[in-house]
Length: 312
Image (cartoon, rainbow, N blue to C red; front, side, top):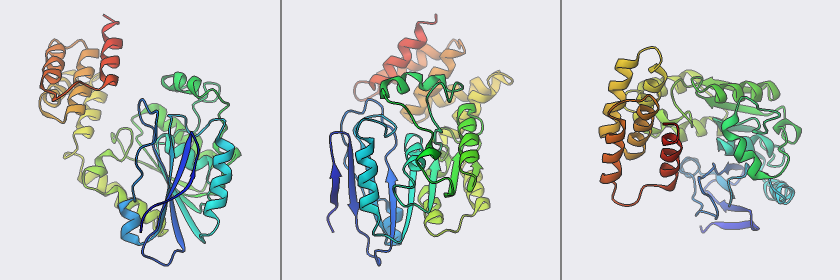
């Protein structure tokens, strides 16, 4: 069956995919933030929803706006209207989408959620510990509500986060204080999002299925994370970066290996970590990466590199 466009304005879009089941369950997925976002991307039917035969509603934004704009009220009304027919609704979101999952949980009629590395709020008055997102907050140009003021504080479900990332840990603390029925589960050195290790084995959909079927198994999720750590370049990168202060020699050796032979985005991140640490090989490793790319490097890479070089 073809997807149905239920709502669209210049900022937000709702697309419905119908599963092969009885139509009683709906998974609402909020799109995560995209760098340099200025238009809608094609929506797709989540594989886990297809496996379960349930319907899926994909919520998209044309901007990196945390779903906060002068069109937020219209989005709220559209969600209330278009999700009321399903007896059981769950919602999922990563990072920015995780904030939206909480904020719009009541509008979605959600019973349970999966929020991966979500933010509680990025307003500096509320989250002074997260200065890295200050410019993003300023770009929103709107007050940013605390999610429990509009969402359902009695919401159940799961919050996954990497405790090695200080800001993500504090956001998770604030979220579970405001939503006390949410289960908080740490995935050390998973990165942002915290499920990058589990994603290597294609296990993220399995976690979403747990939420849909209300059978959360924290031990099984932790085991998925443990079992795939060494296969995940992102885990090795995050662990090496964390070890730089206390164990610089093995950390630098691991970062050099990653900067030479990992996937391009990991090579870049490893090279940048070496550059920040004033490693002698950093510049050459980054130059080699740029030369080996089939096309131009992403604009965000150039901006990060330019900011780093200004420090020297």
